[in-house]
Image (cartoon, rainbow, N blue to C red; front, top):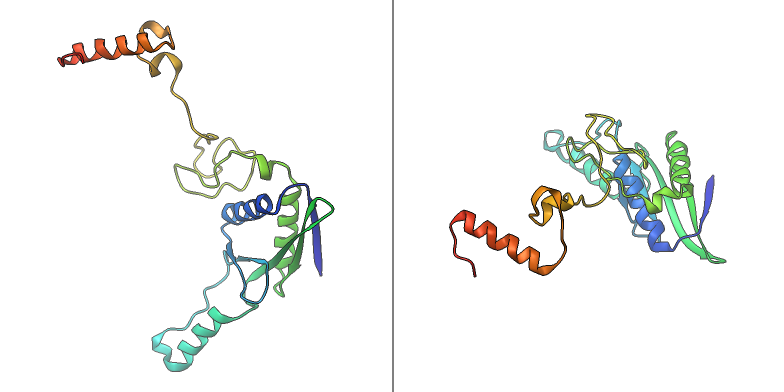
Length: 191
């Protein structure tokens, strides 16, 4: 079964949105060698299935086979193929064999249909606790409660240029005078 989502953005913007989706949900994104698509694997919550040296040659072969499998059966994954049609980007989402693959595909489709996925400024992870921020419109972290800022924060205008009592003047003369006053206070000679 497959889903198709038509989006009014370029392929590069849709690809960035898919990467953002994966980062926000802790998924792994790969490009299979045999196809021109992106594979999103949801490995979180799944038991680690790997052999080691203690299992001998059979364990090492099993470990190597898990890395080279084209379609991992023990993880939920979706393949997303992007194409252009009539001025829109078509994201064809095909599911894997795992039962959670269909829910992952539906979440990706809903994410791509949301216009906020292409315009958001919310960080993908909380700067305080590094928890992934799944909600595009979140203003606070769901784990630690830290306020999320969008983009670069600016210093208050009165403090940025050294003005007295919050009065700000953008002229170059007042800035150089403020710098000279600060240097005199610190004991340096003005230049």
